[in-house]
Length: 329
Image (tube, rainbow, N blue to C red; front, side, top):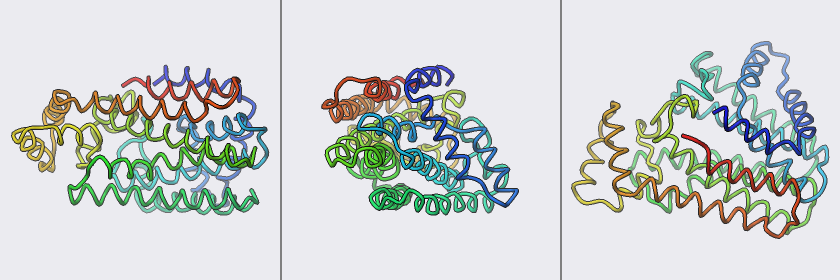
């Protein structure tokens, strides 16, 4: 985990001052007259994530022009929206941890966690008005819809056990890649306004987001709690079928399929069940296939910004793609 942050510190060095402005906007946006809201807000800030999405917004603005006040405000709204969805996700998933610390729902229980997520979403709407940019408002609103639709699609397919590769890509686009794409595109909107810039940065973000989610799905199966900050094999235990298992399932013998179904049917999966599933996925090429797909989407992301002249900001975006590929389990 620490190694990731050192790498990220190097990547964000060119926008160090920009990130200070973003942090100020983010903290101010979370303020409330309700003491409990501020207490929870301080907990969230104290245990914040890597801020990948606002970093992308600012780097995209720098690549395509010069950041404006709207760029920093949009970056703050992107992160608020992201945090709100994570809080709601943890309630739905009955998660124990988030980023290595107790999830909000484990400290303040589900009711307060849901309401805090709602509060942050309302703050996004209120602060979007300050940006006074219809294109940015429309983009963020559509993205919020996709985030919810993607989560619902995942639950629906896990219940019906009808997940396939095509549906999986649609799901991870909606629940993850759409926000990463918007993070980049909104940087271009607030700094450039050129249609080509919007298109290029949206494509960069979408492909990076797809690679990012597949990497997260590998983390769920191959990672440790110390590295991921999350419960290990949480998706497997909730029967959330991801790309490595989808590939292995479709390239398995009848005996192998029977083996998978037996494990997935078990409502209380043990460590041995998870290990058996991991061995099966490894032996049938599921992990290798997922890693190849990460490389494929990463390559598409780099192609999207190939047209821009060399700069420290382009280097940082390129390094972010490598950062995701090489995140350690």
